[in-house]
Structure formats: C-alpha cells, structure tokens
Length: 336
Ligand SMILES: NC(=O)c1ccc[n+]([C@@H]2O[C@H](COP(=O)([O-])OP(=O)(O)OC[C@H]3O[C@@H](n4cnc5c(N)ncnc54)[C@H](O)[C@@H]3O)[C@@H](O)[C@H]2O)c1
Image (tube, rainbow, N blue to C red; front, side, top):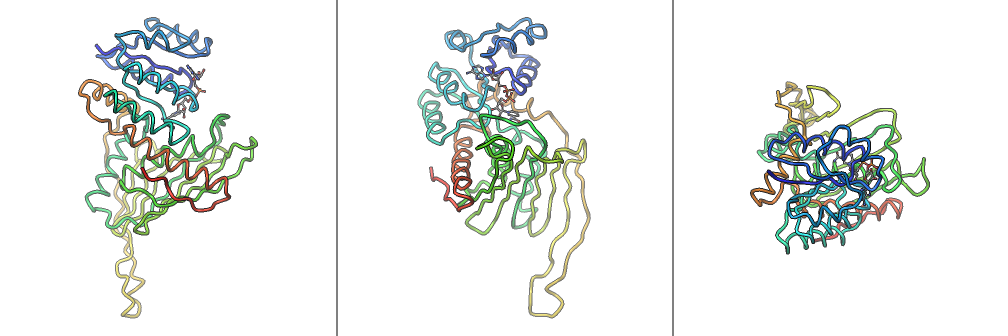
C-alpha cells in the first residue's frame, strides 16, 4: 500500500480525493484544507482519512510517500517546496508556481533530493491527446502549419490568478507535448472586464522558429463552453473537441494539393477527402494521471509531466504575462 495525502479539498481537490480513493493499492491517509468547513463536508463521504488544517503532521508522518497539492495557485510553490524538502514525492496542480524562479527551485530541490515532482497537466493524460501526438510525430499530418485552441466559458471567475494562468497551462502543455519545440516569442492581448487587474479574456500567440504558429483563446466571460484544439498540417487537419461526448476527434483529409504557380489554375487545387472519426478508448484523464503518479512513485521514473515540463510552461506564461502588461509587445521566452 502507498500512503498519500491530498492538500486542498476545493472544487478540483475533491476530484483528486475521489480518484485516489479508487486506486486499489493506495491509502488516502490525510485530507488537508486550511478551511475547516471543506473538511467537515468531506468527512461524511470519506470517514477513513485524517482531516487536518495544516500540512505539518503530513510532513512528519514517515508513512506518507506522496502529496497531491490541489490548493490555490499561489500556495503551490510554498506547499510543494516544503513537501519536497521533507522527502515526499509531489503531484502539484497547474500552474506549478507563479514565477519561473519558483518553478526552477522546485525542480532543483526535487532533483537534489531524488524526489518525484509531477505537474497536473491533465490533458497530457487524455487519450485523444496521445492519438494526436502519434499523428504529429509519425508524420501522418504532414508539416504542421499552425495550431489554435479555444478554452472559453462563463465562470469560474478566480481572484488570485487571471485566465492566462488558470487556463493556458492546459493549452501550452498540450502544444509542447505535441510538437516538443520551444516557441521563440509570445504575444498576449487581454482585458479585465469583471475584476480590475485580473484579465478575464486573453488571446495568446506563439511563434516557432520554422514559421509554425499557435494561438490560444482564453476566457471565463463567453456565452459558449468550448474546449477545442485545431491542428492544421500539410496532409491532414484535425479537430479535438472535448465537449463532444463520444466523437471527440475528427480527422479531415483536406488540404491544398498543389502549391505550384507554374501552371495556371493548378495553384488553387484544393483537396477534399474523407472525414474520419476514430474510435478511441476513453479513460478518465484524471484517473490516468493519478495512476501515473503512483507508478512513478513506485518505479522512480520521470513523469510524463515532470517538473521540467512544468517549468517550460511557466516560462511561457511569464513571457505572456509581460506581453499582456505591455499591450501585446512580442516577448522572447526565457531560455532554460
Ligand atoms: N488540472 C485541472 O484540470 C484543474 C481543474 C480545476 C482546477 N485546477 C487547479 O486546482 C487548483 C485548485 O482549484 P479549485 O478549483 O479546487 O480551487 P478552490 O478555491 O475551490 O479550492 C482550493 C482549496 O485549497 C484550500 N487551500 C488554499 N491554500 C491552502 C493551504 N495553504 N493549505 C491547505 N489548503 C489550502 C482552500 O481552502 C480551498 O478549499 C488550482 O490551482 C486550479 O488551477 C486544475
């Protein structure tokens, strides 16, 4: 049995509590939240775990191997740092920290102490994202031209982070996982319509060395709920729509067949092929993420979304935040 603790039992932490409770070789020994009312609500459904307001007793308990941190974004760095220093393996929610320096320090502590540091980049554990990666990596899509993602809805309106920090880690982690290349520059435009100084609508653009582009639309002030990734390649175009209940991935065999300008008429030769909807076996991404954390904890293997992947995302968020502040000026991404 692996004993673990979940810190932060809010809207999302509750899901971690549920999935980890379902894993047969895991014992959820502690649930921690600084707000006692959260603990009282959960006690009825989870009578076994100890309910604690602070993490000190968890850190002192030698039985605890892993700590899952799903508290507010600003508390990720101090809680994860303390946990790693106490010799625990850590799964920390996104964003792993609010500054590159903090994320870097977390990575360094984990490496020095030989601890697992995993970041909750949930979509990397989505079976459709794995299929997309296969398609991109195998060359089935041809040359990747551009990617755009839409993550918009009405609410949840956060007060300690803007839409960029709240939503973009999902899109950035997917883009980096798919193409495994660092963007060279980022621009971001946004506005704070609801709360002063907290951008609720943000448009982020990434530029890559070979001309590839990515665009990310983020909002919690939108009439639609969209969770979409569109990738346009020279051979195929794909749309991953996570709001669809079953047909989440559509592959369009569409493109431009001949870009030659030599023969009149040939340059506009468009290709309209079949649309394929592959049958992808679905698993709950959070369950896959939780299983992966336990496997890493036991095998001591680097997670699919390790601390260094989290740091790459934070570096882009920092550059995007700066661009946002400077009204869309392109900002180079800090090199690690
Ligand atoms: N991966 C995903 O898909 C996903 C989805 C939703 C939220 N999240 C992330 O999960 C985190 C939590 O989000 P949420 O919606 O549950 O927020 P929430 O506000 O509902 O819950 C946060 C909880 O953490 C507790 N908390 C704050 N500081 C603490 C501390 N120092 N020690 C112990 N408890 C503390 C709060 O009392 C609260 O109960 C955020 O970072 C968010 O970005 C991730």
